Length: 234
Image (cartoon, rainbow, N blue to C red; front, side, top):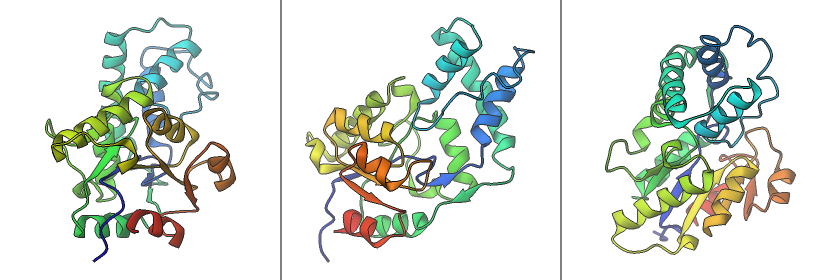
């Protein structure tokens, strides 16, 4: 069997693995609405794609003319996860095309597969468990992963994931040995800031042309596409 082309595969969640049907936004609005009576419509301008959960809270606080601090952010995100527990069961949730098959192939070939996402851990687990995808990823203190807790800037999330992969493999990974799989220009810019190439999939809000313009090294309409499979499997 041909060796896999990448030492570690770093997957985004929203728009890449699943579409949560707006559950995250609804959960955030419920959370912030508990403390802000005049919330109606004030978060409509908030574009969530590719942002870490911590940055989303910061931007929401700005739109609501409220002061941000880390303790407040932690409290908001804890309540957000509790609301997400109910919202994720709502309509519109779907596992995106080709995702389960790709993860099964990578698992079967012994690939090091990790999450590299702007979600907090609890939110990531809820979003993936709804579609039965949580079984493909590691959880817990020893997991190879990158989550919102690693930094407000997505670059820090990518860097943390690469560092944990290096520790697992027992050597310093060259960033070019890793691949980020994501659906937004933020995925591209964060990965490139660390030196990691990107497979952009147009299963979120951004078209192939937009991902290509953002600098994605490889672009495909979905993980079901033959172009994506060639990049992933060699």
